[in-house]
Image (cartoon, rainbow, N blue to C red):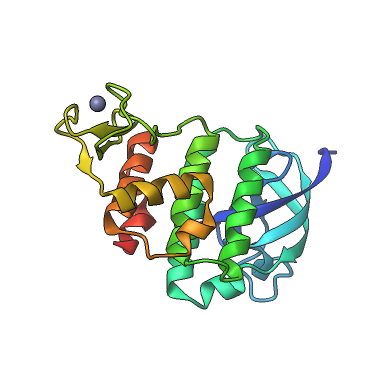
Length: 240
Ligand SMILES: [Zn+2]
């Protein structure tokens, strides 16, 4: 008898398997990232199918498997997917969030509780239209990377440490640079952009709700994420 256990999780992605099954990738509250087979979900009368779409938050009874877990029962906890899917921008942002979570949590069955809380919070804010969708997405990316150990230095030049004339951002160097030290790979950032980057990292919604994100802010986040994850986040291109 395989070991059975219960956990809640967010569906990050789904892929077809054979004739009628799907492999569901989830970030769970207590077991980190898992991949589970949902049997028969592509048949029209499946009990599970509708509950295992991307961005759904579900409570599951799982059976431990060698490669994939089995899904025995599924209950919906929050129907984030509905309000998110009704709005194109929210859907695009949720796709970025799910893809980032999937890329960032690379090891399966390793608890990632803080990442899970951050993911739930971002999808909740998106589904409830708490803030601008793109700001929720960019803030999620900055904070998820920071939780994983990559926090860009935004308060002082990474070369000389000065807090003056910070006009450039270099993903490779890991933060901002002053006008004297900036390297060819760095990109110009305005004072507004720099303030927005700090607010995204801190989750400072008073600041973020005030103005639209500058294009340079979003490009810096995208570049930062790419540098760390070492490949473009597919969904991010859609926002530009
Ligand atoms: Zn400097």
